[in-house]
Length: 108
Image (cartoon, rainbow, N blue to C red):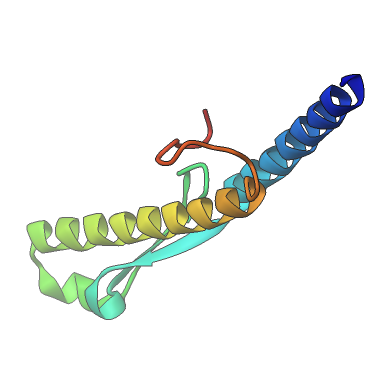
């Protein structure tokens, strides 16, 4: 009986370590989000820090402030989407085999 409890605790500790490694990888991950025609590119970390914004020369020819704002917003949204996909994949691997209720989000 106590051997079973010790084994469960060991498995829980290993799972916690896997999840921590996955979270560390997610934070260090860098995603590049792009607007249509790649006129605006945004590099963002998994911690949602923006590292870089690139504007194609054509953006300046648009001369439309609203259009530039929309392109920038689209590039940021694309980067966020890529980070969420990467995060979901990493956490799924880290929690594989654990009895986790469906729909539970990580980190807790």
